[in-house]
Amino acid sequence: MEIVKRITSKTPEFFKKVRNLGLILAAVSGSILAAPVALPSALVAAAGYFALAGGVMSAVSQTAVVNEPEEEDWPLKKFIKDSDDSPH
Image (tube, rainbow, N blue to C red; front, top):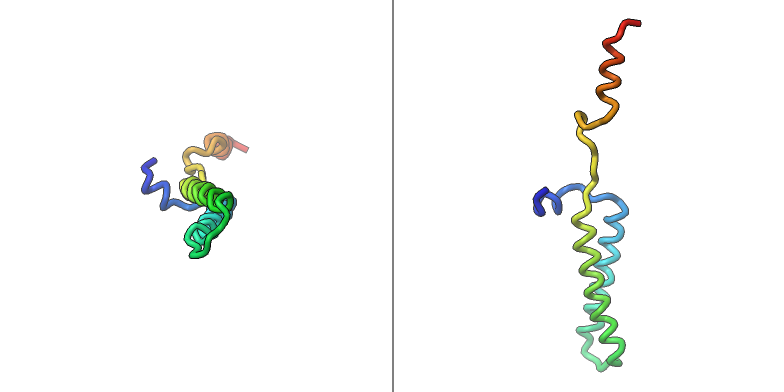
């Protein structure tokens, strides 16, 4: 599957929540990193890691797709079709 098609396909509900959580995490971390006041170096370092984690969470979650089987891929289709043809 092409990456563009994968990104624009329907995303499962769980991964939508993970994506949104990652975006929130990245936004909060970005605001801490861009703060005009002096913050402790440990907080700034942690914010950098959280920003990276949020970005990765969002990117990976966006590429998850709903895998709905095609009608011809459904394993019981042949069985149901054969049973419909049989005499009753």
